[in-house]
Length: 78
Image (cartoon, rainbow, N blue to C red; front, side, top):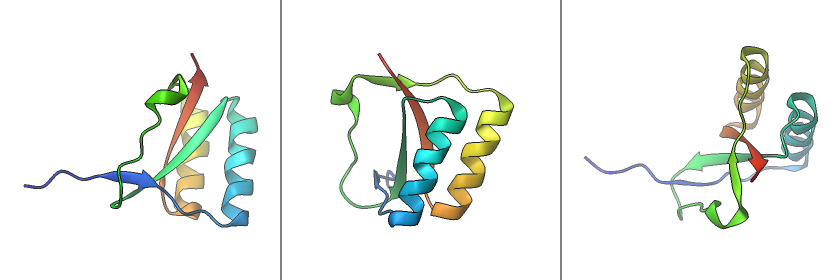
């Protein structure tokens, strides 16, 4: 069994605008979007921690994920 690697998702201008809108909507400091494969994405040096989200905020991210084709994670600055 091979380990799945996650890399930064390639986003067009429309997708970046959706990510920015999601950040504002859910009140996250930053939302990063990942895609499977490629070089491993490493955000550990950014001093971020996962943001606590309620059901409505999770639904917002999941809807955005469907549109941009990646996995979104909301973060807070540590």
